Amino acid sequence: QVQLEESGGGLVQTGGSLRLSCEVSGGTIDNYTMAWFRWTPGNDRKFVASMNRDRILTYGSFVRGRFAISRDNTKATVYLQMNSLKPEDTARYFCAAGAVRLISAARRVAAEYPYWGRGTQVTVSS
Image (cartoon, rainbow, N blue to C red; front, side):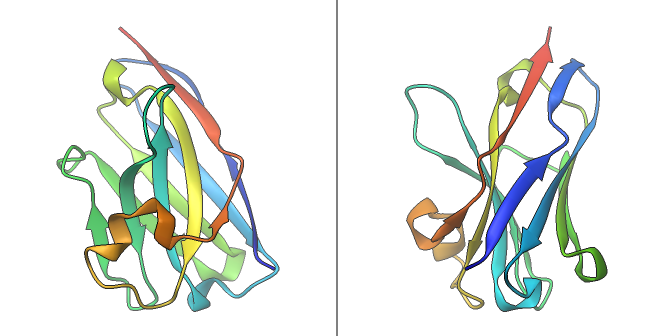
């Protein structure tokens, strides 16, 4: 069974950058659609970005060019580069793995991803 482990979160000032990493084990990264979601207390997990085997990228509307998802198959790792961070980006960020081929609308739905990491906290100070 595939396992996911996130790292790279932390405290950053407004306008700063962070790169989150998601190490994948127990499965071949190309066999999944990989995604990032974020969560704040009292809310559902919110879609941030996804990338499938064909390198098709999908982003949440709030990203607006600030974030970039990428993958390094040789390291079995998925990344989320986050720039121009804002206090409203403060959340726990989760890596998720889903079916290799998800239609566009499905990529944004947390329930379409059966595998999840434990998350990494990102806090953006004002």
